[in-house]
Picture (cartoon, rainbow, N blue to C red):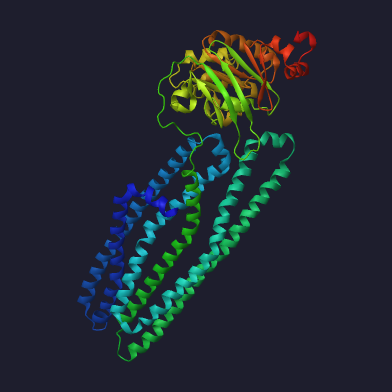
Length: 577
């Protein structure tokens, strides 16, 4: 997966990568040329006392050094920009892919895991690209070039290269093989830490209300300790790498001086050549060390790439139609025809043989016990899930055949858990209508019974809203969410238990204000309170995924036992009558 990800995402950066290779090649060749020039100064200048030769060759070394510095700096600059661009592209790709997921895929992968994949995992692969551009490209060039230049200086010492280089490879390879399982486990442990931290931050009020701070601290501590244990074990193996490399490097240097000294003493080798050979050996071993350091990064980057690939290769279960319908009547007629729905892996369906028609200008209410399938029914209309049997139709067209943007433009959804985005009151309302004027926003707030508390805020429409709307009460959050749906004036309104946090008086005023606005729209209201839906044109009583009652309030009181039980649990006999 790592190779595929790099090949696909780095294709657009081929010119930059070619420039990096060119600059690294020139810079590495310049670095390889310097020991040879140094050997010439020792043998032909210092040994003979030729000051002019030393000066001329020294100037050449300065020019070569300047070229090396210039090319290496340019390669690092271009490589860094390429790596950052690669990371940006991958993060954008994951973001857009997750944005197309249905609720099923988000639940399957997990929100905390998706955050880790889009941050830490991308960063690991991005770091691999950066280090490849700055180190991996130059390492093989220096290794091969160093071997050739060392053999050019003295062929008799070349057997040391045959011993040292494979020994270094095997040592580092053994250490890396021990680190790979730790890298794989670390990413899973990071997911766990992120999940627990996210839960604790989101639910901080609940934690404090139930005095669970010590328990949650222990829970987070356990997850942290598990991550630390894996990181320490992996770090110990990492800590043995550099001493091992330095040991082999120093022993190799001693061996060169020992055997090379004998060759110099016998006249088979000059002192300058010995110095150059030792420099080339150090360069070769350093290049091997850089290559193995890169190999150390590859396993972790490979794990991260697999996790990124899992997101990129996951297709949404709510697939766009191959030949979408781009126009409909826009009346808002909503039909459920023998709808069935089963969650993946579930033994029993959540909805069974659900059929009804919600007409424009009418209010269709859905009521039932907790877990009866009411929210699932609503989520099938905007295709947050797709039916597993039957069909949902808007103006006679199956929603699975409609252009997604067209379908969503027809719907104003207020979800069961009203969510507000960080920003202002105005920015949240403009989610419903991006070009909404202040007058339209105030009108929507007034209908939603939210104008009074927004006007009481010093900044009014520009009053800040924190993530999730945690700085306003539950009822205020629901009313702002309702105003956000109202401002777009859709033909289908879906209120999924959207009045649960409102008191009875506010609930009644809001429903009365809604009536003139929704006279030509289809309204579907999911509610737990009978008082909320008592005046609906059609009430559907849902029990265990099936519609067990249908009609107006008065009719259901006489014909539906389940509805009678719900009413009896909430209203007195006089109020019911």
